[in-house]
Structure formats: C-alpha cells, structure tokens
Image (cartoon, rainbow, N blue to C red):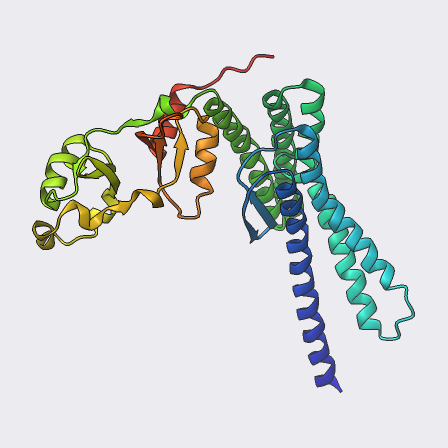
Length: 336
C-alpha cells in the first residue's frame, strides 16, 4: 500500500508539472497568436526559469495592439486557473485529483497576477505602456515612464530580498534579489532597445549601406581575394561578378573555413553564395524595417542586398555593423 501511494504521488507530481509547463506555453502561445493577428512576426517561444517569452521581433504599431497582445497572456492564465479550481468542486471522489486541480489552478492565477505587475517589459508593464502611449501620443515617452516604473519594482524586490536575508536569515531572499535585478535590468535594456529602433526609423537603407565596389571577379584566385580585398579593405562581404553581372556574395566566414594549403587551388566563385539567397531591400526602406527583415530572415542571413527602388539594380549592401554604427551616430534626444 505504501509503495502504491508513493507511485501515485510521483504520477500526480509529473502530471502537475507538465500541466503547469503546458499552461505557461498556452500563456505565451496566446501572446503569439494575437501578435501575429496584429501583423507582428513571432520568431519563437522560449521557456526559461521565470516562465516563458514570445520573441516578437517588432514593436506594436499602436497602443491598442500593444494592450491586446500584453493583456491576453495574463487573462488566459487567470481564466484557466479559475476554470480548474471550479472543476475541483465537481463531485470528484478521488481527493488527489481535487488537490491537483486546485494546485494547478492556483498556480495559473498566480502566474497571471504576477505578470500583471506594472513592471515593464512584463505584461503588466506593457499594458501600462499602452495606456500611457494612448494618453501621451508618444511611444518613446510612454516607454520611458513604464521603464522607470519597472526599475522601481525591481528595486522593491531587491530590497525585500535583502531584508529577508539580513534580518530574517531567510536565504530565499536570494530569489527576490535575483528577480529584482532581472526586472531592473530588463526595464532599462528594453527602453534602450526602443530608442535604438526609433533612431533607425529616421534613416533610409541607402543612408547606411556599404558601396558595391570593389567587386571580386568570379574567377579570381581565393588567396588573391583574401590578400587584395578582405585584408586590404577590411570588410566581411564582397559582391562577386561574372561577365559584369553580379551573381553572389562571398563571406569572410566561409573563407576562414578553408585550410591555408587549399586556398591557392580555389577561386572566389567556389565560395560564392547565390544572390537569390540573400535578403533584398529597396533603397528607400527605413532602416528599422530593414533590420526587421534581416532579423526575421529564414536563411539566418547576416547581410542585406540593397536595390534601387525603380531600376532594381544592386546599389549596395548592409551588414549588422552598419546598423550598429547608425545607432551610435544617430542617438535621439527625447524631451518632456
């Protein structure tokens, strides 16, 4: 009998654990579904120690979209939790099942309420930002206020954790310190990220692109390509042409993988990636949209080819470092 009881405890523990994991996944899945319905791409859903996160690669385009995307996760968790607790009142004779339903339900309600703490970039902080955004008519100012409130909650958590350790000898306070530091750093980093994206919104792709020239000819020896192009011009990519027609791009990373002794027997064309495989943007596309295209590329590319808006001729290319340089040179000043 005792062995049977232990087995049942293990089984119910596993069921409860996987149910909570599934609840967190459902929470994030709802974020993702609503985000996609509002035109925002979702890269993936990632589960980690505090729960999970839907990697939405762009900022919402309106306060209404922000509110719906942020609120749907906590709402799902709270409603699911209430539903599970309600099920426990059904005439179930087996006590462990009742206890499991109540436990999973309470955890879901707790998850929903915790996420509603107005600590940006948590869900509650994003709900707060959407409200401030609608009132101020300025997403940057709304983000700054929400970020400061998020940092404030982070400091509260850290303070409570420190008090628990110093005066109560409760080392569970380390968790509070950890969570507080997480909230504080994420609030500040999220605000900085929004500023960076806004600075890119004010630039066009042609303003940060690298020149097409020099172009490596397809039949150029690989060791000559390294010496006369990669070493001389200190770039990571070069366009490759065959009979005056651009056919692809050669990457430094691919070149470095070739053993030294084989390079003299190879040509640039052997390592050229076809131009059709490289994401392409128009010259008048905003740098923010260009970065989103590069980030969301299925090919995991690190380069964008820039074409003329009218002729569609290739006129340049953009690397990640070009976005970084643009951000550092175009920091925006926000006034009250």
